Image (cartoon, rainbow, N blue to C red; front, top):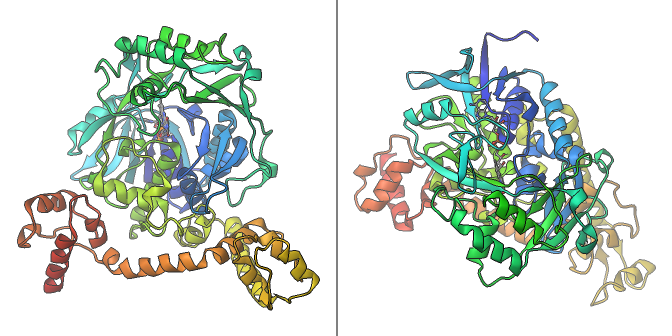
Length: 621
Ligand code: FAD
């Protein structure tokens, strides 16, 4: 592989956003360079070694549907898999996997190293090369200059990173890694709005010093779920259990006693932390009436004794950390191998981005991941993929692809961020999506793989499997709708045993599947053979049971599509529209929404203002 003189895409940072960005661009046939501080830390999980969960697995499966690596690496590194909300409807069902962080990282690195069109380089990027208002390359710490058509920045928590433990603090990108200071300084000279956020992590514990016998065991699910549409249980390493224990009054007293040395409660940390992943000191203050909080004891891997105590993220001084850990049942003799800490870092106001994640001020410069104000590997990976593919499209002289809110959670997240910005680390939830019956984790491939193929992201193997699945769903739906069972037959008896109201006439199997008491396996083998492919069976069942709701939501999407697709010119003159309030005018001018749909979601922009925009647009055309 000859080292190119110029690249189509340069990606800065090999975290979750950077690796997906680089892989996407390279898969599309564009010469791509990934420059990162340290090749050993490609795909490193800075915090919890877990992938997925509610809202997040939806993103992981969308990345997967578009040929990305996160789900595949999870299947190769996952040591415990569960389906959350399994008793609730399919829209909110979510897969979560505990990962062996070493195996996960190895899977990511192997994929990167074997990706055609992708070059890796270990160096810190200290500067961007900007000509006029266009990004054309990067300068590394050694002064090496690499040129490209586009640059994707995914520097995570590293820009101006400051690590806090108690009242001590020092510069760092995350524990053990250097911060990115030069680049942060340079970026502050550009016209972006920069703010500070913070996040934290718990101390890690040596399993040999823990008494698991007094904790509650939390095994994985059987049958074991898989994360990737292309994944299989055979790929999974050994599966192991997690454990649950609790904080108590004494733990809370210890924490309260240490607050005068807490960087958060003494005003040393100014950045806002993740609301849904609060530190333990935050929890005992915010939920002062609770005398106990759950702590999930999660193994970090199969070949390490390190444990991740999920629920006690903290930046209290080390002596307080040790005392609080040792006050928890089962951890009375615990040895902390790594102290917990908080980190403050720069993030950029995502309202300065377009829906392709390109910045509004510097042409060809894309931002993805934690630097856009999000938190989480999945949110970062999804943005990375989108930024990487759009950087590649730009390098190829093609138009950007930006999924709509009704197409993907990726679309929901980006639209939320670029429309309303964020003042706290943004994480995905199913409740953020208005069309969540359509945006399920189980159908991410049906929503996106065809587009991925068109973009050049999906390889032949995935495409073949996808086409077979689609065909399988059609065939099986047709079979169920033309296979009947008649009253007073053995098959009817079998079904009646599960039904509240026995069947009194001829029914097709598809009609029976609509009954709430019956699932695919109850009906599929009546007068025929069920399909082997569980993904096909699952789709047939969900599409049949929720057909009415899905149709209604599809109609609503179609009705609103006109607004969604009405584009607002970049140079739209909001001052020329009479009747707009000053507040609305300022917001519209500040955000410059790309479509009428996006304008309608800006906080404070009223339906009346949207009507004025519509009237004005009609007059103009
Ligand atoms: P990162 O994973 O941070 O990767 C950035 C990469 O860029 C790194 O490889 C770095 O070396 C590289 N890099 C940076 N600057 C340069 C440069 N100038 N030149 C070359 N390479 C560069 N998420 C949660 O969901 N919940 C949590 O509770 C949580 N807690 C966290 C606690 C801590 C202490 C930290 C550090 C992170 C936490 N996270 C948490 C966040 C999670 O780690 C991130 O959301 C995720 O890793 C972001 O991915 P990213 O790709 O944007 O950045």
